[in-house]
Length: 492
Image (cartoon, rainbow, N blue to C red):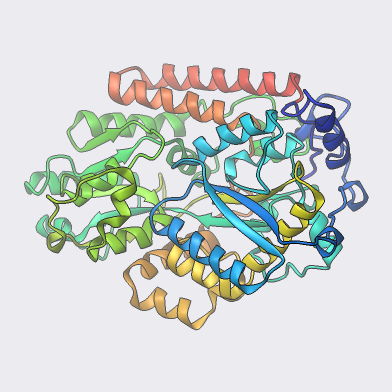
């Protein structure tokens, strides 16, 4: 796609910010399209990567990394950072948790950008791609790739393309995940269902829920966290755009929402009807929400949708490691772990299973830190992309490999065959490689937060308050369009 990053408004309050924007961005387009149009960028327009600054450092350079991970993923992140720190003496990486969700981290990033107090690296959600690039606060990884002659041939092609703008890769590495259907196999058996054949469409989920409820296994078989990601994935799976301009990825200007139609109304109505018929327990989406997991753990539900990154944490919990829920302040004393048996299947779609969009987090090097910190950040990210690091990040942290060699590592292959969480992650990786349409990978939206808030408010109103699906979806689309117009007018 051809897009020109816009000058950031986050740092416009300071002279330093204006300098950073001038050197880090190719500039907004004259027609006001900003990230939605403009001339083809060239490598010469990218800011330089100050690799030599690390060589000139006289003492270890500290790189602060902001993240929002919990449980086994956070443990693995710390383990690997400790390995990197022990492997060399030039750079010291220090992790800082900024909450339990990407939303919390993004809010803190925006606040810190205004105060010119950003970390060396921030791991932001994939939804922040356009906004963080338009903000002018990041050093394109492509600058360091070009300066160091770094070979990107081992990186997953679809992910590189997904996070590239004008042929330039912006995050230095990415965490890849897809949503899965987690379910209690014992409940399936008690209802006469085949646990090896999970439902693959929403219609099949309803049929399975009806059978489980009719068998008296559980009162509300489906427990659903009402997060926007699932609804977006349902739309992506059937080729419906969230916004115009080729779902925000075209060469023109993105001007309006595009989801006010039958597919979105169908899935929202499906959730409402499942709730009304006593087949589904709807849970409003809040930062750090784990009530859908707890419902399954306490056998108050049979099925839920959740990220593939939960795989290793769920397996650890089933093995008796209740420390994975300690950070949420949850008591597990009343949970009989011996009675639990879970499996995971492809994401059930409107028409077919496993039709997903790329999800996860992206590691951005900020350009507000001293040159030696930016160089040190690239050194760490280069180390992180090694196959051997990616193998551990995948097997223990649950993220899908960004390195293609890591996906063929014997230990990964063994895990995908023999381990419970490994089998789940293999399902997720197949979705990533076979279920992502390279021509339709998911939306690119500047005001993504505003869109998600509007959609989740609509879903909550329909599901929890009985509002009309068509009216609420139309309202959410209008709110999204207004947010896009404001984003374009304000030039980010």
